[in-house]
Length: 307
Image 1 (cartoon, rainbow, N blue to C red):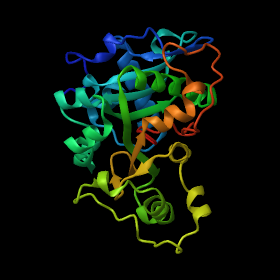
Image 2 (image 1 turned 90 degrees about the horizontal axis):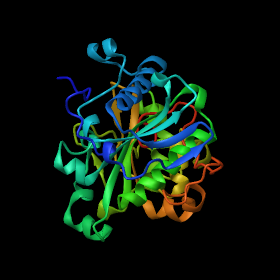
Image 3 (image 1 turned 60 degrees about the horizontal axis):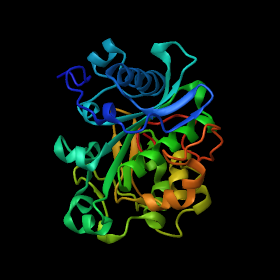
Image 4 (image 1 turned 90 degrees about the vertical axis):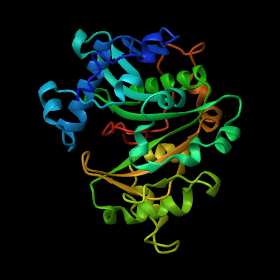
């Protein structure tokens, strides 16, 4: 089936309320407004995930030179656009955003293919979020190699900050990736994440039983905390600084050649620490000087943290 989005785009990005979230010189961050911009984001994703990295494309993706799946038509696509580049090459950074209300009206969340999300989608967690607030899944993030710097990452985060405020988001979540498909190579890092940052039991998200890889193969005291932290990709470190929680169980993603962990981040943690720096739609500045929680400017991975 063709999930490229040509006939299926009903996406909310075409109805985005904000003209843009932030600007800096020729760079602008906003949601995609038309199919051609979504396709440009998919071409960037293909270049990063399949040509630069080790993901395995389908034959149709190879022909199209685009990365896409059945979730693309229902997501908002946050874009960093460089207006000085040729029209077909202007998208230099992207995040895919899927709100809970949209996911529930269509095919659910992408992460449900790896993790049991029921602790987050039940009535108890809805009551915990309160005020008709909702979840947001972040994924398919990547940045053009020439733009992996603080300015571009800061613009993406200004866009995310604005989007969070616009749509009453309470928690962000997604899958963060460590390189390679051998969890044993990351046993110290995984054990550290499990023991030091695991989600509270009341909303502990676990990997699906058939995909669950134990993270606690080392007990506290059997790994060096500093060494474990050094093994983490920059984006995961950034989310830890923001106060994220980690789910139970790693998952090996053979298509993308990664070992994934589940990340859950309370939006209030982002708002408290970064709202003044990143800004929101009504206060976003044009100077592009916002600080960054050090997302992965090195590889531009595809998911919440690493994605």
